[in-house]
Length: 221
Image (cartoon, rainbow, N blue to C red; front, side):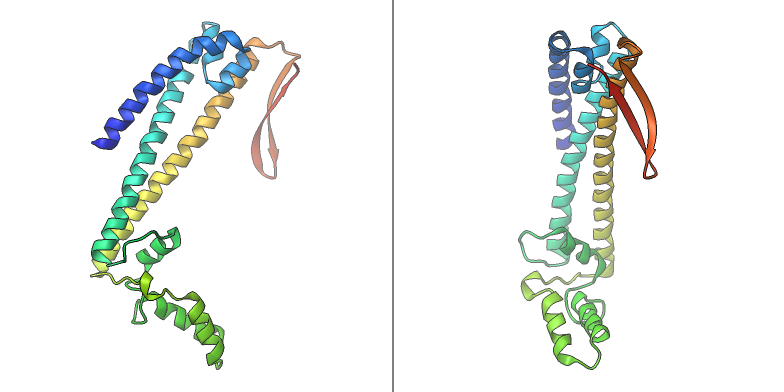
């Protein structure tokens, strides 16, 4: 319940800030800049109803982004504590690659299914008949004892992988929310250009560059 409660507080605070800021910003700068800063503000200053939709979208998208960020933090903590309990890692701070390897290998050791066993096999394949180079490769790539882990069971490792997948899904949602936020700002600015600018002063069109669609704006001040 904590993330939801925190998100509700964030939603209320953000709504209050935007409602207070919209009249001020729309009176002090031109509608285009106003809408680019706060989507919908330029439209609201001209009594256009779509401005309220854009403003509401801004509030919801920021709230979704904030909620997702909190959830990711909780999931990261959950995966760490789960690995402490069932993979017996040492307490500490680890990079993302370490957590990915935790999900892929039953242990860090040289037994079957272990990460270091995989490294040793790679060394043999890369440097056949060269034990010196093999050992150098092993020494450079294995996990030392202070990074050791050993899952209690394959089922525990599978459950850990599912938690990580859920965390990655949340990251994807967060990235999507940021992208939609940017689009909301651009759409609001484009709408102002189309609605309140003279035809000769503004142009909006779609173009394709390197197979990627681009929204092109041309505005004469």
